[in-house]
Length: 183
Figure (cartoon, one colour):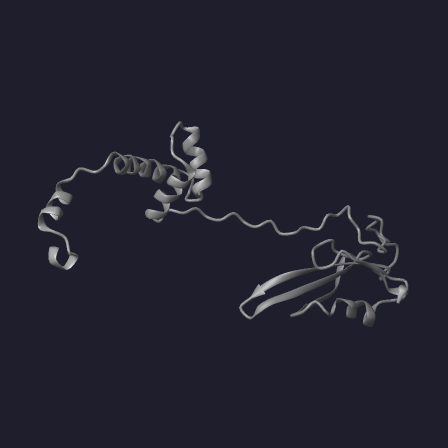
């Protein structure tokens, strides 16, 4: 074995008999504490937050050292969810008015509709579900499932009376309200 590794036998036996260095012993102690904190957190702590928790407990170890010990022992945290862009309800696109003014009651049928679109993940990919509700009867007027966002205007174009006021949801796909008599 010494011949394959190109080391002298005396050097190999000296290495085997050598006691671990102070830094290696301290890293082993630090690893035990890291594993405890990692298990207590449910496995979500990464190196930056692990370093913060260790520092709060009085441990003296740099962020790079904590990251190195964690990486050498294949300990890693779960990444945080990315903040998705959310529409702000108080901000309305220029030129778009809210015709309903939060008055969700209708005195006659087919005068006010509300609609919203949501993404549905399926085995075949992403589909969009559009639901239209008549505010007079509170019943579902339309529901469409398509694989693209080019069709919501066709709901208004094909089946809407001229006096209808429609409000689309405030989510990321729309932020629109539409009057059918504005065609």
